[in-house]
Image (tube, rainbow, N blue to C red; front, side, top):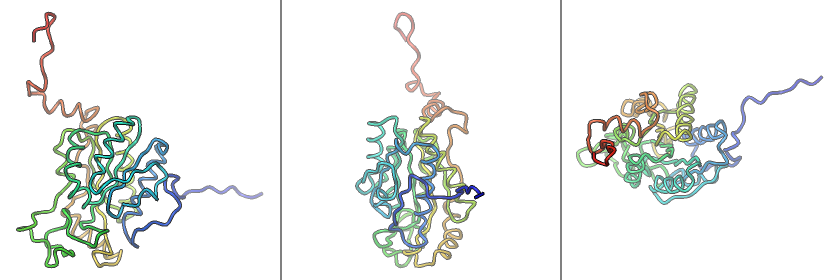
Length: 281
């Protein structure tokens, strides 16, 4: 009698069986799979809309089985906002790199987060512009050599790198922020847990969620994949520490709006007294 076989590892249904355009050793392929696994496990592929902006993720519409929309450079949060407001029961995510999200798209990022838009953002931070030649990005490290900083990033003229999770953590509309990486099986599992949690918070209507993935870019760093992970661990993780930067549910609130109201409890105009029976306050 033939023994039954059990599939223990296979391509997620939400990840299409196509060849990607990512460079060998790029972290994007791992993260794409984790996003697809989260969509599969939550059973929301048919309700999900992804937003692919400009950058190395520009062709993500070819990789995911859910509906996808292409956005102009940096405008993914604005497009995601429109889609979510039109389809409030849908699951909407933006998949963005650091040049897209933290440079040309910083205004859209800040305002979508502070409005508490119920969208999920997957943010890839590899400290460089990947697709367009390896220029200095808002996340490039001090003294990091890039195509546009051949002597290293000079903080006296270019300023310091932007820490996105720390920046967004002060905004009242944000429900969940976590920074992860995918340099080992243990960290891949942590990253998947964070991505799935971010999607689940959106499904539950808790507020804006973002997962930052500290990633590598072997091509533009001029390193092998193995050396890229070593460089990332040695240089990026001290500047971009991993961990949860905001979680309103863990803080005891039902959602971001409730947490925001608690922070504004002592502000009279934010908390007007209820009207009396005669209409006076």
